[in-house]
Image (cartoon, rainbow, N blue to C red):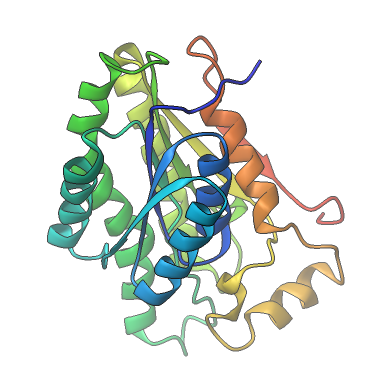
Length: 252
């Protein structure tokens, strides 16, 4: 049986759209105080108000997580605002796939900076507070959920650098899980397939390339992944969901 997240604090990165936004709404509905982190402050304020109007508690922080200082600052502001941190959802990401001969090196750097470095920076800053929160947690457990991708399990042509970042996220999550499981810090990875978010709008041709490979399929919604996240973090302490792969039914 799932548990509510009352008296807990959840920090969600990439909260200005897509999976991060849906996860923030879902966790607030479960009772968590939600900290919204992304670069687009206007969208964060809109989401903050939406959560508050629905009876939830939310606080937004504009931050570029490719900066270690800004990532650490987001965690520090969370602690200053709410005094603790129980859940970290790492959802920020970019996908700029394309032929390697033609792809600008800048795009590769962006994927490494956001998908991997940003995740590492905020996780590093959050870990001491997560470990500390266990002792006073009403649930006696805390969670880190990293959003990877099916691209973190299977490599594909023209996806090399995105594959590299997502394979790294999947591997790091498992290594952290082993390191922190005895301290009641659960690490989980969620690997979505085709999901209708802005990720596929970040570069011309991404959606068309995917459709050419898999055909016309019914895509997942961001809310579907948010439900997987909520399932992970609302389980009782004895239950650790280490990895979830979620694909559209039609995706081969």
